[in-house]
Every structure is written in C-alpha cells, then in structure tokens.
Length: 300
Image 1 (tube, rainbow, N blue to C red):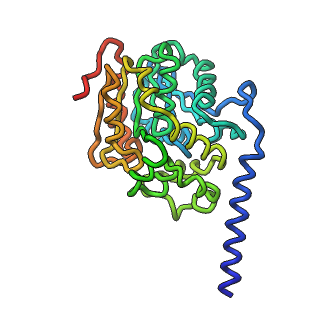
Image 2 (image 1 turned 120 degrees about the horizontal axis):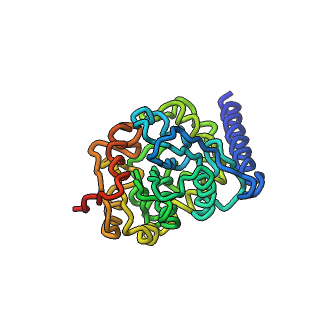
C-alpha cells in the first residue's frame, strides 16, 4: 500500500513538472508588435509614478498599499512580461526584452514626458535602474526597494542561508527547477504570513521559461555596477530592510559610491517585503522624489 502511494506521488509530481515545462517551451515566441503587457492606470493626478514588481509577482503586489497615496498621484501598475496576466511567450526574457515591453506601456500612457518617478521592488528594482539608464529624459527620479545585487551564482549560494522558500524563488537560481512544481506548492500551506492571499495566488501566474530565464538573464547576469553607472547623476532612493535575507543589504551599500545624488534608507527589523509591511512608510520616503529642485541628502 505504501509503495502504491509513493508511486502515485511520483507520477503526480512528474506529470505536473512535465506540464509546467511544456507550458513554457511550447508557447508562441514573443511578438513585440502584437503582445502588450497587462497594466492598469489608477488616478489622474499630476504626480506620475510607475510601479514594477519582483520575480513571480504581479501588479497586485502594490495594490494593498495604494490607499495610503494622495489623490495627486497617477499610478501605472504593470505586470512584467511572463508574469501576472501579461503574455508568457517562449522567449529570451533578458534585460532588453523586459525593458522594451515596459517602454511600450509607458509611451502609450504618456509617462515618458520627464516628470514621472519609477519605483521597483527586487527584480523590478533592477529593471527600474535599467529603464532610467536607457531613458534618463523620461523620468525625474527613481526608487529601488530590496535590490538584489550579486556577483554571480556562487555569490548567491554563499550568501543565501536564511531565506524562506518564497524569497528563495525570488532570487536564487537553485530554485529554478523547483518552479516546475509551483502548482503544488503555491497553496495556502506554503504561504508566508507576511504575504497576502491575493498576492500569493498571483505568484503562480508564470511559466518555468518566464521564471528561470528572467532569473538567469536579469537577476543573475546583469552587471549592476555598470547599470548603475549610467544613472550616477540621477536622483535615486534606495530602500532596504536590514533583515533582508534574499537581497543582502551590504551588497546594495557597495553600489552607493557610484551615485552622486542618492539616499539610502535602512529600515530596521524589515525583510525583503518592506512595502507589504509598511506601505505608508515607503510612500512617505518616496514623496520627496517628486520635488524637482530638492537634491537628496548625500549618503553618509
């Protein structure tokens, strides 16, 4: 009887894994002319802000905290390519492809006129730096939350010790094969207490291809020092939890000397999801970025 149960479990896992693999590799290729990212615009205020979520996330990541924003804001919530309700093609998912897909939405909604602030969390933080570096005239400033800065796969293995499964899937390449079976572990039993149910549910809306290629091509292989050097004079706010096991804080501090107009906010007792813990605090920190004349306090 035990052997029958064991074999049944193995077959179930194999079936889910094969289905997850085929769902990605058999998808059509990316067509930038026909495939538009899923997005939502909220508000019509003069202060424009673009929000980019992390790996396995969606635009819902930000929604629980939007009630703390003033009515003077216009918010552009975007599901990244391969995640949320956006298309999930069998494609490269490298930095340029992600940025190109985001650019189409920003231009369509008129957030490319120079006064917008762009905010990104984790994977979205890397894309935020890349986006502003590519189009510095589109944005007046940027904020990056929980920026994962690693010098390759070995550095991740060395630093990664205390992160949860959820955070591990967000930045660690060792988890890319676990992603085969995400329909099995994306259940309430595995939901971290600090992740709301709707956000956790949306985290399953990706394919193995969109997950692991984005992880390798953007989080692992991006040279953040080179990327950050493109925006060294831009107003940039770093927000980071001191207890962030997924993106060690010392790795972000190492990038600070590159910038000439940066501020670093260390949040004590906060982990990788500082926004979910205290969105009002995060918005209060971001608010000064809308000031055109005010220079950020220099990093000590």
